[in-house]
Amino acid sequence: MIANSVSRRQMFGFGGAAAVALMLGTGAWDTRSAYAAPALKGDPFTLGVASGDPKPDGVVLWTRLAPEPFAQDGLGGMPATPVRVQYEVALDERFRRVVRRGSVVATPELAHSVHPEVHGLAPDRTYWFRFRAGSAISPVGRTRTTPAPSDSPRELKFAFASCQAWQDGYFTAYHHMAQEDLDLVVHLGDYLYESGVKTNKRGVSTDPKFHTETLDLARYRLQYGLYKSEAPLREAHANFPWIMTFDDHEVENNWADETSENNEAPETFLLRRAAAFQALYEHAPLRRTQLPDGPDVQMYRRLSYGRLADFTMLDTRQYRDDQPCGDGVSADCADRFDTDRTLLGARQRDWVLKGFSRSQARWQILGNQAPMGQTDHDPGTGTTVWMDPWDGYVAERNRLLAEADTRGVRNLVVITGDRHQNYAWDLKRDYADPGSATVGSEFVGTSITSGGDGADMTAQGQTFLAANPHMKFFNSQRGYVRVTVDRERWTSDFRVLPFVTKPDAPISTRASVVVEDGTPGVQV
Image (cartoon, rainbow, N blue to C red):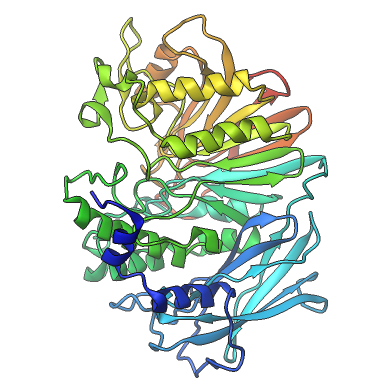
């Protein structure tokens, strides 16, 4: 166990030089006369552009300079020197009405990624942005600010997605998402998978540099480069601001705080975690408050959409107790009911509960990584559940849902990834009590590609519907969930593809499920 943050910083080498590199890339520190862009070989914007964490007065912008994103050393073909990157934000796509200009410094310490935070924009408005490094100009991105805190917008339109194993299929879903009329996108984790990639979607062997599992910083950078080589993913990033978090595969399958699935020593695993978090930051539109400090990163946060909705993004990995009963599936694990077991950690849990009391939003949206509702595998009298999601932490789930009810949360809706399946179900105050009250709704979204083509209904889906009376909808195809929220209702459209193992799949809405204002639970 690493005893405290000071020893962690010493262990992972976060000193003054690294802090300077981090802040230069966010624009918090700047020396305008230094770091002129050198002549670059090739297009430095191969990984695209993005924006994220929108607020009423601004967003964070992102790009990473990488003319050779598959360079073995993970440095993207860039020189080992800082490079000045300019950015512009405009009211029009042709940049005739530029409202903000600035520059930041891309440093080799952060793989020449930049995260300028733009302020002073008007609320609830669309903007366009681009970057320049030397003579190279990036693709144009589009973003949007959120309404002012006191505003009551007519509606909110967003999509949420998760789980995109590169080798499992084409990222066609993101191309369709990019054509949607959305205010923002929420990504709930498993942006990449840590395992080696030996063959591509066509079964052809990949370059040997991708065959090994991701363990160090250079390898994580290569993996992000591989995933961002997918044009539909870059397209969806360029079209909307994203709110992002992580689940397990950005580091390692089913990790829990300092506990590795492979039982590595904590010191060894935390080195890997530090590399994974740095690579995540280098490839995502995250604010400086999400700068990693070695193996630690502050990812739980709250973003408002006027008085209509609050997004409360959870972190269900960094602070949890190890999964009970050896992880996996169990029918008789008493430890999952232990009142001291935590998935969120005490500090995060208290922060969530205080947010319930303080928020004036009509809809409370929890961005959650693994399903909160009970997933019983046994249609009979027993209960058989997975230990990694909230089913392994029953007392904390019951407390969270009870507190939401007691504190008068008007509409609690949880959006979740992880499962590679679509669910719509009721959240119950206590699943052990057949008469327990419904206190909220949960929509579990399927994967972008993970699991391959999938099917509308599976044998497991039939079992789940029989064993879980709170489950109102099941589907096991690939895609994403499109959400429209107004003052009267929430509508989740399950957007699915018939296949992902071939390109150019069409998309359709498999089902639309509603939550009515003031009435907890889903209506199919």
